[in-house]
Length: 174
Image (cartoon, rainbow, N blue to C red; front, side):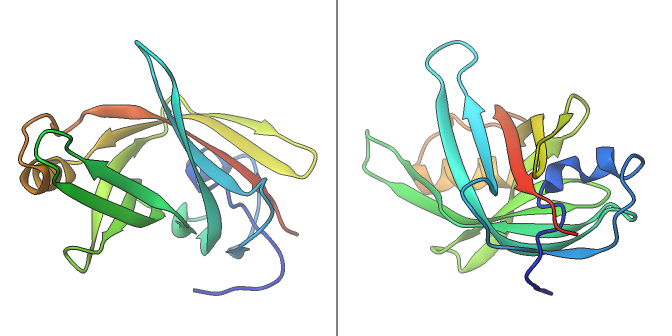
């Protein structure tokens, strides 16, 4: 992964939408301010839960709509009924033909696809220092659903389960 002291298009979820509107070279994304974050919100029929994951770095090529952006933090899934748990951390947004979010599962010593990302309803709003991308759909992958059900001894997770929408707020470099 390349890095330099500029922040370029940390809004990885917006890259397919920005490709036609913004001529930007491949660039590096470095850890930045609190404004460089991605978050997922869930709560269509009840209370809203928001998770924020600071951007840690990565690289992105808007012209080819490719790249990956890393995030710190993670999620700890816990089954209250049987006290089984599973942690997924070190999220990475991967762009290309099938946008997705991967995560590292320490119990497996492996990185797995966790969420498929849907950019069809995404909106892009320029900010004074970069861009904000809203309404990126996130659904659970089949592998993640199977893994969560197995690790937690449950059957509540299904492939395609809508987990919420993602937002990226990013500072763009020069």
